[in-house]
Amino acid sequence: MQENPLDPWIDSVIQGNCLEILPTLPAESVDLIFADPPYNLQLQSELWRPNTTRVDAVTEEWDKFETLEAYDNFTREWLNACRRVLKPTGTLWVIGSYHNIYRVGRVLQDLQYWILNDIVWVKSNPMPNFRGMRFTNAHETLLWAQKERGARYTFNYHAMKALNDDLQMRSDWFIPICTGSERLKENGRKVHPTQKPEALLYRILLASTNPGDVVLDPFFGTGTTGAMAKKLQRHYIGIEVEEAYVRNARNRLSRFTQLEFNAPIFVTPNPRSLERVPFGALVEQGFIEPGQALFFGLEDDLKATVQADGSLVCRGERGSIHALARTLRKGPANGWELWYYWDAETQSRQPINKLRAKYRESVKKHHSG
View 1 (cartoon, rainbow, N blue to C red):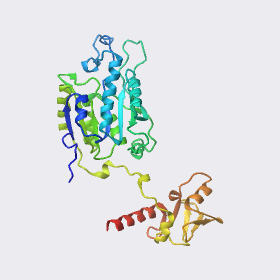
View 2 (tube, rainbow, N blue to C red; view 1 turned 135 degrees about the horizontal axis):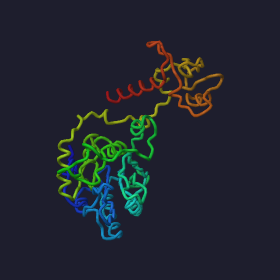
View 3 (tube, one colour; view 1 turned 45 degrees about the horizontal axis):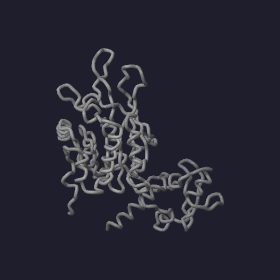
View 4 (cartoon, helix red, strand yellow; view 1 turned 45 degrees about the vertical axis):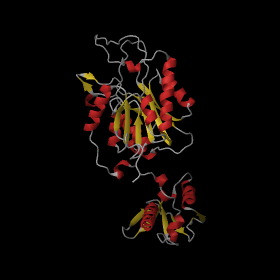
């Protein structure tokens, strides 16, 4: 078996500055990057609640930059380093607030990343604005970008639709901030001021990676990316400069339960990825016979007659399963979902889609044999 050049880094948390670590990784080796960089909040003083308790805001040194120019230079460096290790088909997610996300977005575009979406993470339980001088900051913005415009990339559309009760997933995500037992604490205090909720990373990884993919997080923090990668059977590489975060992340990941690998659990079927099957192929192979009647719908008495060339004749009109379905419905139609045949075994009408599935299974067995 050929050795993976990423093996020394796979499923590990590396302590160090990402600007120093990223150049040591093989070029074009990771499938996805999730980045939660410093926000450069530029806080001028401590924040206090009306009850005189102090707010745990971001006051750490890693979030402080002398000037906006210094922050832009830092952003350009880490995004450039990420671009080198990202596969041509790879994508990158970066999250930020109004303090930094617009500057990050400009640098992304300057470096020839192609932005696919901006996602608004709406916090269902945001921290109030205690001073009452501005609107409560109740959202953060995520930018999703591909390395090369027009390249093939992973988007598990059907998984997102299934996650959202069979409705197309929108770009506004209502997810609560990290609280309760999920929030890591040490000596009664938060380990990290901006720990991201597991649900957010779960959705991102389910949407834009596949089982076995490698996810890189250059600002690993307390390891939420790694935890969700383990849960979804992805691999992770975490880079984190702060020793306390590294310690807590490693401990968290060592205790995180990973489901036993079972590919069907982690893969959402995508009908678009299936090989196209012409209806005529079912006639050729004897799944449907010439002269056989097809019913339009489960209850309708309307019938069509199958022709030797795979076309249908109904009410004097001849056409494909799709063309006739469009005529009868007077609008867009998928014939595979609307025509039914009589199944002698079950003594009931069954969709012709069932025969298409049988045909695909027979082809699969033939190839494997």
